[in-house]
Image 1 (cartoon, rainbow, N blue to C red):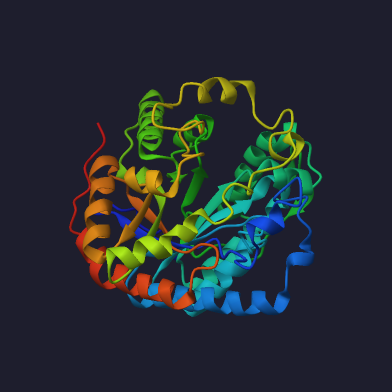
Image 2 (cartoon, rainbow, N blue to C red; image 1 turned 90 degrees about the vertical axis):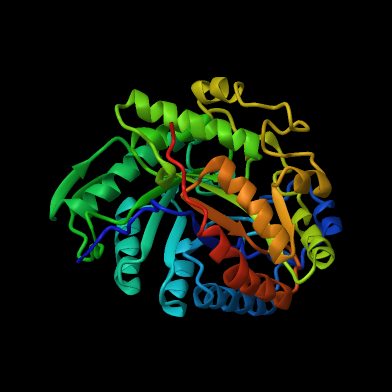
Length: 399
């Protein structure tokens, strides 16, 4: 048994992240269909090409561990050409065997559409595999995941919340026990494998811009990870977390907040700017599709819609704070995409850290058809030149 992984107190922890895209898809392929996800045929997928890509992504994981990233984060999506990870726990198992030091953040398991007992067992198994290096992120999943799983979208949130509570119960209450809930019923619950970490692996909750998600995370004291909103919107969401925590009778700090953004380092600014253009690969097609795929009736609560209307939008071209409609150069200008030499990237990431004081910073480090060697060089430069400088920046307490 080991203690739960410590949350950052002194400096920001830096994590490597990749969606593991199938970079052979082109915009002209997607333009033929009414949807970039459920309507885009899987006949465009070539397993032999995917095998090459998977192994390249695994090499990137190994290098991130070797050059002293603090962690590696992985995720899960379904029916997604830009994310070849329909089973995040499989990816985490690979990471646990390829690496020796990094924390492994699973962000996360789509527990609203999966068997919570199996999820509890798999994550516990991973914690044992890795020697207690797992951080367990839980996600509701997008509307697409809900639809593909055949789940009523109006039940997504309540299924998520019940699954969350049951998984924690599996980790903390000795079995066997009986469980009867609104969505899940088990005559006997007795998971044999339990986590190394006690009381259980830390739990993260992510979001792209929904204040409802921030409020839920704060009420449960789970660190919230913002996945790529513009800095103005992210700053506002951080304040929502801080205010909710105060209402709940506790004070939030940097260890409760993280931020993801796209970053590429090369030997010169000019080379990095050119490589980084791939961050905009097929961006216009990813969420394109019928409303019943992307936002079916009942998936968002009325409360969520009402609170979302309060998000800052002054620096956004029609994106509600998420940068939708921004060009590559505009996103670079607002530090949503950061590319350059080690000196340039260090300076820009310092600006982000000093503004947000996040306990966690996630480097979304490759996209589309980026050359594998370019990404490996970026990881090397990040680990050897950028991260040591970022670790010297002290975290500031939240007021």
